[in-house]
Image (cartoon, rainbow, N blue to C red; front, side, top):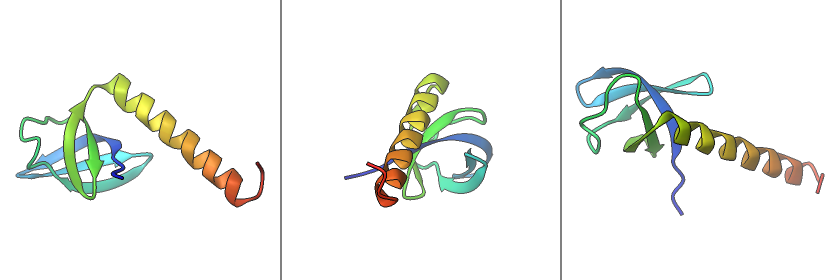
Amino acid sequence: MCIAVPSKVLKIEGKIAETELGGVIRRVSIEMVPEVKVGDYVMVHAGLAISIVNKEEAEMERELWEELMEVLQDATNGND
């Protein structure tokens, strides 16, 4: 199973973009999405931007990810 997370592109230098998700800044390859621009949102998997998504989709994906993490945390703590 692949998991990709939405991140906002802050800066582009050649084939590398600086992205942000939840305050965490990461450098990712944009070779698969060469048309990406600063301000776009990309789905990132294993350090590679694999697609461009609109802001609404990125926010929805981020909310789902946060819900999943909350459920997993509750399960880890024994709070079914």
